[in-house]
Image (cartoon, rainbow, N blue to C red; front, side, top):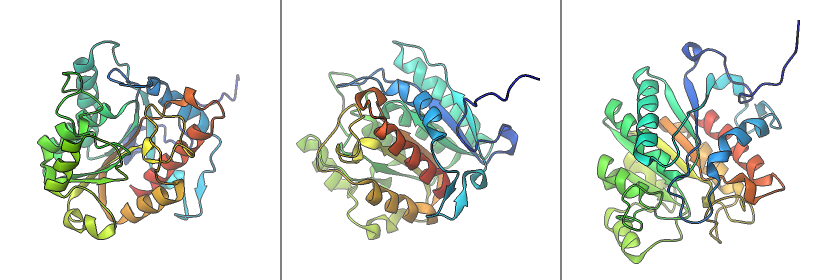
Length: 277
């Protein structure tokens, strides 16, 4: 008998979709990237790097296998056709939500969150989004394009209602974007600011550039004065008490950090998210 062979799937993943409660889906798309492309390479790199993790988390006192997740692999997304790529993501996410499973997307750029949230909203009407990011992502459009990673939260707010959007770590954007945030009270400064959505279904979206570039240089649009890993990890653990039905972790661009440290940090964030879900 040949083997054993190295796995191409995430550490601790179940083999059968039917047995899983959480479905991890790779979303290798960066078609609207406005600065440094390369986030489409993140899902595959993260899978390989996951084998450097420990299966056990002393913070959660859990093993990855306790989360009952399966790694479905990467979707095959067309180059140069943003709408078709988003439709493929939307259809696959809808299948996961319709099967009463939780969806975990691994990007890819932040626009991949839009189709996942659209699908989630079809199944869970009482939906709110918690958004970690350095950037507001609330532009009406970017260079005339409404489907952009720079406008993804604007499109999501139009779907779920801006009063159901909460944003953490924001420190960059246009004046009108900050005015929109203040109008709808989307900024979160402490846990009390999340009380209004605690009884809702939650989609959690983490753009890794929420972290300071000293921690996360491997991203498309690094922004100084960000969170440290420990601060983000504490937020994720706090959210364990919320009803998280979907999540994604996006915007790792691994080739901008040849040390591999950024990729290692994101694998640990993903482990945290799996355990919080």
